[in-house]
Amino acid sequence: MIIPVILCGGSGTRLWPLSRKAYPKQFIDLTGSGRSMLQETWLRLQGVPDLGAAVIMCNAENRFLVAQQMQDIGADLNAVMLEPCAKNTAPAVTCAALHIAASNPDATMLVLPADHLITNEAALHESLLAASAAAEQSHLVTFGVVPTHAETGYGYICKAKSLEGLLASGIEEFVEKPDLATAQQYLAGGNYLWNSGMFMFKAARYLEEIGEQAPTILDACKLAVDHARRDLDFTCLDDASFNACPEDSIDYAVMEKASARAVVDLDAGWSDVGSWSSLWDVKQKDSAGNVSIGDVVALDTSDSYVHSEHRLIATLGIHNAVIIETADAVLVADRERVQDVKAVVSQLKSSGRDEGTTHKIVYRPWGSYETICLSERFQVKKIIVTPGHKLSLQKHHHRAEHWIVVAGTAQVTCEDKVFTLSEDQSTYIPLGHKHRLENKGKIPLELIEVQTGSYLGEDDIVRYDDVYGRDT
Image (cartoon, rainbow, N blue to C red):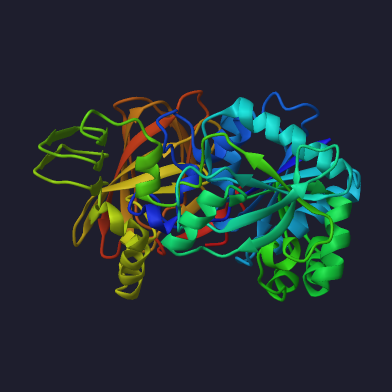
């Protein structure tokens, strides 16, 4: 059985302002398919023989996003494992391997980042079958992308000779990101592949290898899994044990030192979508080389990527540019400099600004809210509650709230009263009153909330009951 292990913990800062820490690129529809990168990662595996339920590794902050998006596509999940902190890929894969091996030590793991783009699913499936055959012979397999140009933003894998009886090759060496001249030599040589960060191997075989190469990682991960706790449908790795684990990538910790390692060629329209420039590379362009998404008027504009979320963007006389518009931020950059966008995010963080980490739309386990207007003593929000979900039973010390239902039906609790509001109906929640909002309907509940009071911060909340286990 092949168990997909989807790594879903990245922050995607190079795709700011669309991708942010609180809602990174793996949860966004970047291709226009109507599905997120995470959802696409699972869906493109359908049809692979003997495919099992997926294990997803993510952080606690995004766990409800993961659960909702996978539920929306009917994905079969083995586990959603929560990492207390970021420790790179080796600890994440090791914890997944321990979890899988506990019930099926002979299972094959297919390790995939959640934020990659692959356009040729048939070619992907062929490479997966080749890798599965190599994994059955105890090889630790990685996937090397057949390069299309001299790329300096990827690491490379140098192939050794083909392995007998397999559609795979040995690995001569892993090499770091090269300069342009070296990348051109790799491309001309024909035996270098881009390092995709995708892997396949037997769970037991991987644990054996990491036990030899990085025993401290294995020991810490064993403790983290053994002392994990269940929280709703999530497996929370033990904080203290996981925090004590060394930080390392699977490449450095295992693959560069492993004895039986192999690489399978992948020629399937792959991209890690690591920057706006790489997204421009893979998107369909107009006759002037432009990619335009949303309400865009481009005059005398060429080789540019223009993305509008909320309003008209008009360009005139620009070349090789990236322009990204969201509700609260606009990025304008030279397409050759987009790898440096993370420096903008760092500057915002050091300045104490929220735009580097959160959107105006803030996602919660029950749905989302968006601040429409904020002034000194009032705030207006649009709130959307997913069918079947409810907010915590809570009160506020410093604000009162007015709720107006725009669509759907709301069940409202206010002190000892429970009542229903339909479209165009409203209610008032006085300061200090316990209250709760719930959507028992089958369509999203949309309402406008008007807050009034001396303090309108999100920390003015006292929770009495919360189905999602939040204390504050």
